[in-house]
Image (cartoon, rainbow, N blue to C red):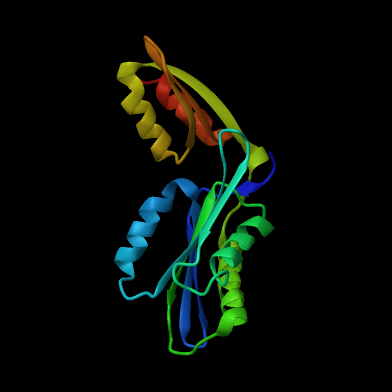
Length: 190
């Protein structure tokens, strides 16, 4: 499957007619933590508009979005279109909005959320899905914490975990250098 993703989150702030739009683009597995963090950091923000796009286990693209109280289809859909337009998957965008007192109208909102998302994409280091490799590791049960620690540390994606009778098999996806580092860390472990 072709497309792009990212390994590190980025954020950008766009001010339009006294309103601030702070767009955060990040790997999908960070979504829940990011939403919680943003709601804590921005208690006075009016809206937390979001969109996600990911590939499921059947190799299908699944898309979701929310206007979070903005007029219907003025924010979530334009945010999702940013991900679609750049063919970004396994990622999400949350745009935090502080209302500045001037109504933007439906067209103004669509442009504002689109612009904020586009600027976040411009800052991101996108990685082609084709450049990502897979590694399968089989380890004893007593090594699982060690393996999971290194998967998290290297920000790799665990695609599948198969718990056998005597061992655990992990299928991990990421950049080949990081997969090599994971393999070295596991094979050199005591």
